[in-house]
Amino acid sequence: MRIDVNEVTKGKNAEVLPPTTVTVQSEHVTFVRADTEQRPTVLGLIVAGRMKPSSGDVTVDGERSPKRLRRTIALIDAPDISDPAPNVPVWRVVSEELMFAGRPAHPIAVRDALDELHLTAERRLDMAQLEPTARVRMLLELASRRPGVEALVLVSPDRHGGDPVEWWRVCRTFAARGYGVLVIAGYSSATAINGLSGPDVSETVAADAVPLFQTGELS
Image 1 (tube, helix red, strand yellow):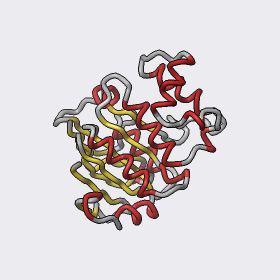
Image 2 (tube, rainbow, N blue to C red):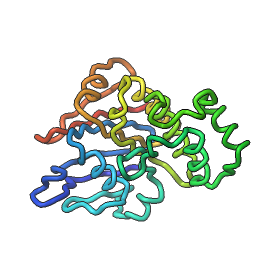
Image 3 (cartoon, helix red, strand yellow):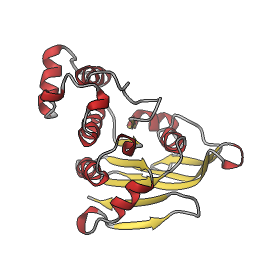
Image 4 (tube, rainbow, N blue to C red):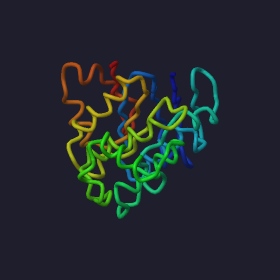
């Protein structure tokens, strides 16, 4: 699957989101820098077919199909849209995500999922207390289990702290499993990830004259 985001903007005179172009495709993880509080969520909503851009378009395999985007893209941890409440315990988030995936969500199923995620010891922690990389791994894994999901859009993981390189490597494992992964985060994370060498980052491309850039890689 290939998703092409072509010069999308949001707001009058593009003040909410300046012209942004990015490609998300299966077996790739892509980073886009967005530094204001609102832009990461707006871009995530547009890419995932949940918000109409003011200009530009989004295509999937060459066709305009917001319905297919909504069906095949999981929007993950977007502030005030799809992020778990900070005071909700980890086990409850796992239970809810299993229900979204159409899977059993009874206590034994939740226990087994926590074991698979290596989060048994953290099951009673509030989400706000969960280590940032573990949070990213958990939310990506649970979202990937939803029927029909082919791409994962992760919004502002850096707002929880932690080492960007660590959660970037988690994202790479999902690309290796065949998913298209888009990460939308800020300047500090971009700097850390862009500093990687070898197999972690294969190319870096400046995008327009706006404070956004993209890093893509083949797994």
